Image 1 (tube, rainbow, N blue to C red):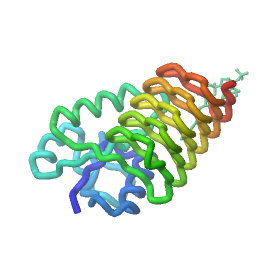
Image 2: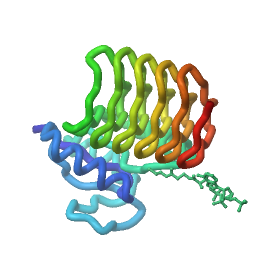
Image 3: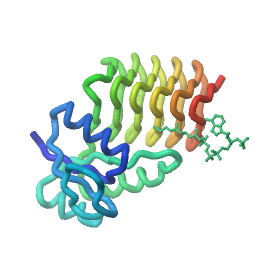
Length: 189
Ligand SMILES: CC(C)(COP(=O)(O)OP(=O)(O)OC[C@H]1O[C@@H](n2cnc3c(N)ncnc32)[C@H](O)[C@@H]1OP(=O)(O)O)[C@@H](O)C(=O)NCCC(=O)NCCS
């Protein structure tokens, strides 16, 4: 099993770690963050240590920073990790259902019970969170976050780094602009 380091360890990182454990494809060696977190995993120092971590033979990274309107942090972390040479595997919880005809970009995370239906296109570094539904032919831009229980009906387009709040619904064929924040429970018609 290959090793993986988690970069940033808040609440979202705990979900990511849990899915990595359940997938059983990677061994979590520890995490980086500004300071030691409440975690069973080893604290490996700040992000300044990432080059040394890579040089020690750990070639995979998962970004644990969740966000709402903080797409910029995830962009910066992504560039930093790619410059060093890290691979950012797609993490999909075993309970999620992803169509064989859907595409998902590198570093994206698909949480428990999420559904990504046929011909949907999910960009890189996207979070499709617990029980979110991305219906047929939706396009979700890089760094976007579809929060827990949110529903994107068919053929919806979500721009880069947009945030679709918990339990929000976007009806079919609508477009959400990049960096937009859709409030929890909102319906976009
Ligand atoms: C929309 C949101 C970003 C606004 O946060 P904020 O800028 O801190 O705004 P406030 O909480 O001060 O609320 C401002 C006003 O919007 C209203 N409001 C806030 N969230 C709302 C929502 N989801 N639906 C309807 N109205 C909402 C508030 O009642 C308040 O109204 P008022 O001015 O009449 O009192 C936030 O409420 C929200 O929905 N966040 C998403 C949380 C989420 O989905 N988390 C998932 C993590 S996986």
